[in-house]
Amino acid sequence: MSGAGLDVLIATDPSNQAWLTGYDGWSFYVHQAVVLPLDGRPLWWGRNQDANGAVRTVDTARTDVAGYADTYVQAFDRHPMQDLAMRLRDLGLGAARIGVEMDNYYYSARAHAVLTQELPDATLIDATALVNWQRAVKSGEELAFMRRAARITEKIQNYAIEHAAPGKRKNELAAGIMAEGILGVGDDWGDYPAIVPLMPSGSDAAAPHLTWDGRPMLAGEATFFELAGCYRRYHVPASRTVFLGTPPDHIRRAEAALIEGLEAGLDAARAGNRAGDIARALGAAMDKAGIERGARCGYPIGLSYPPDWGERTISLRENDETVLEPGMTFHFMPGLWMDNWGIEITEPILIAADGPAQCFCDLPRHLIVKA
Image 1 (cartoon, rainbow, N blue to C red):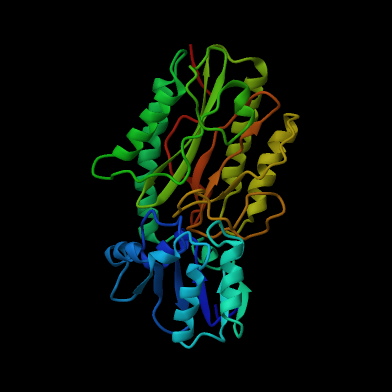
Image 2: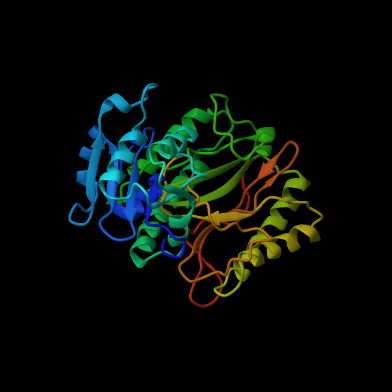
């Protein structure tokens, strides 16, 4: 914040709110924020009834809590940012340099317009991802949470693999996956993931972000399962592909190229290397197989809320020169989405202090073939 010339930061991303204060609740559909002054205590601010959740989840010894009246909620003649502007003025920040997360799912155009109007003497500065970047290197406790989430990921991936079969309705399979994920592993209960199970089949697998419907699975089709175990909001996503029947040659060639590229990328994912080195290692294997793949191949993971389990900072693509540091965590996902089919075999990884990346999950790294 000091480097960016900010007097105060308004963090509206619920992942950043949780990371800064511990706040955890399904209230991000209304306006809320953590107000973090350069000097002084952070303030969690949101709807009055959600303030009751804040005092139960934040560290109130270090964080203040304030709520606004329900008359502001989804109203057309007023806006919650009027209340926030009043509080900023009361804190002596009415003419401050205020950082806001401009490119954020939870900070609307109207919110910015109202805040600007209500604080004419303030300077609003784009502070998108300022907090996200501080989350890039995980603490030991965060990694412990992610390892617990990884055991849940293994459980739900193995459930999907075991229960995928011709005639199995996709919604029934999705229901089982979600139930197993919430049940968790032992005493490690499962939280809701930021993204629902992604599990398209056949030609639908050409589109990476389709979910499910009520149709049965069919012989002769591939289905990829992109799933994440979640423990205390920390996510560990992984993908595996199941083929029902005998895979055609083009699927087998894609499988071989993906695995070669994945393993090359894991070897390149070393502290001191660049994010782009991982993408270039994957790309070399794709080029050798004659497969054109232009998409980025991964992103950082950790603490998150819907609609995304990525951290929205580093991208595993050839032009990203971010230096990899021990404790960074990524979903390395070299999926292929072709004209009428798709395949994903991915790994959630940890950048180690020495050597290649460590994989969070222990899952079969190949196409799963079921007769």
